[in-house]
Image (cartoon, rainbow, N blue to C red):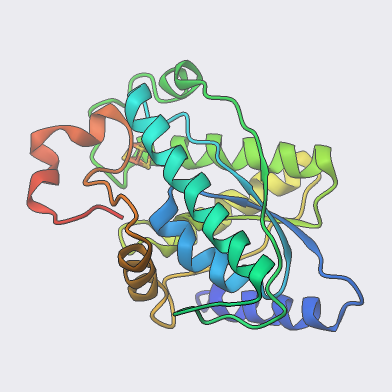
Length: 229
Ligand code: SF4
């Protein structure tokens, strides 16, 4: 069986969205501002986007707040571009729409419960599968509850994360919760490179570890990386 091309599937749905009379609504699970910068630049051309910042995996409250504030600052800047109709340095058109925010709870205990017994797993292993499932099922529930046409996640922009696993997890969460998952592989077509450019352009905080306290352990070689996302 040939591997699915999620980037192609994404493109087919965006073409469909462009033909619709009204832009379909999309709930974007945003993991952090740097990753979501490129996703938002792209998605706001085709969808009526709302960000859902549900990241209970960021177990240190100060870190959680810092990343959330950066996400809010990014959205504010992007929305001010739409208000003025000026898009300096952006790959944007007049079709770009304003981005909304849906408040999500901060519940690190729910995350810690979900990954119990998997604390020592390596990054990319069983703990991350649970982490993705938790974040995407909560996003699917919010999308279904609020009547969004689609939901998706900025996590597929990271070269360090398994896009196939993320897409399959998103689809399972969609099926279980009565929502529709938008397949994606945002890192393709230099998407990751673009997220680095945008992060630098907006001076976004780029963290040097994934998010949970376990991903900060020295044996994960986190300190050898210039930036995580
Ligand atoms: S390393 Fe990242 S994806 Fe994996 S469990 Fe921790 S926060 Fe979640």
